[in-house]
Image 1 (cartoon, helix red, strand yellow):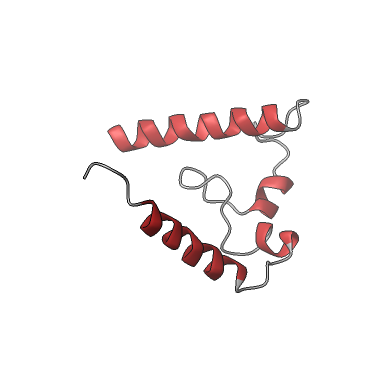
Image 2: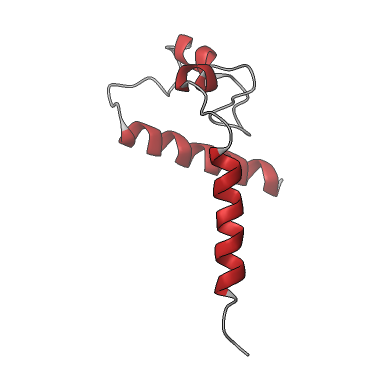
Length: 86
């Protein structure tokens, strides 16, 4: 009575995987630099190409890689937290 319905969960995962794999994957550059992609939304509504061009922004530092991404996402979370609590 208290068991999880693993059959239903697995079927749901199977349906989702089928739907995901039914469509060809987009080229990463097309997706990343597409007009609808906002990598750091909701607090930063700029597209990836605009972010890359803005070399004066705090995103562009000497640090690259996961540390830079982690710092940016953490700042985004702080901004959203501040904006939504006002």
